[in-house]
Length: 432
Image (cartoon, rainbow, N blue to C red; front, side):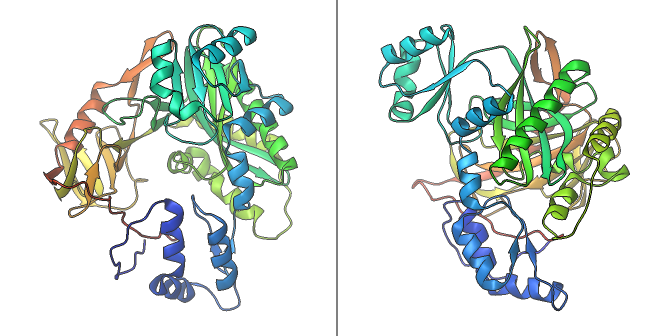
């Protein structure tokens, strides 16, 4: 783990800007040069990048081991994903792709497509539920119309669903599918965004039997279609399971490393075989290899029965702007004899967690930084589940999860500011 010692204050607008700043920073470049054997080109992988990142890497002699930014941008569209999925035999929830200008227009296209009165509308780009709108009345339309009018949209039938996330790697030999994970979605204790992603759980019963086989084939078909677009490497797929009918649908595509990657790469498969991300690296190392993708997928399905991991992504949910004066530390925590969550030791690695009484917390903002509604505060990782199933596909946060959230939030303190401040973003780079 490395971060430059000299970080002048700068207002970043995106993760892409942060990464571009890091790549051009003299300390970072010196660190990379010192760690790179003579005659070897450094390999760079990151979640967020753009064409400027590609230009920087080209000038510095770095290999950006990711698909082209222009291709990822196009594939990141929910509209494009839906069309490619349909072509590949990986259908979405019943929907229509269209444009509408008013409430009457939305009603008309929904009626023609037989989507019912309760609708889910998505615009092409956006994450964590910020561009997904639930509309069942004219009042709902008025609330969200400014974000919808003028956009090509996906209008879906609203179903009772269980969201499932899975990461995969598209190699020259086919698509290798990682473990399936349930998703934590829209919990008010974790995120202010309705429908916003806020964590994952991995456990053997996420998908079983025919549903698991169907979902695996759906991901592999989508991977085959992405290959025709020139894509290769890591990607994540959200799968929706209709809890009333059992149907399995394509949800969304994230053509990149995702927030679920941290859990994917601590699985039994990652230790007994290889981490999923290693297949991505192999694809970009310019060496010949041959993989029995069917055999790997079958073996990983068996290994998936041995793992239970969970993570929660904690955002600021209150409508405040504060300068932080106290925050929880990054490291390992555990429950003491009285049930209190206690900091045990600094750590940057959660692989050593042994049981449900232990947790790892990765702090994002520290003392001196600002928090505001929607700001990422940190990520908590633990063994065991954090949701309980209430029947009919409905889930709620477990008592243990609520206790962990309250315990971590209690460690934050801040002073209100009278003038809204532009949030300050920490910068750093992780190696290895």
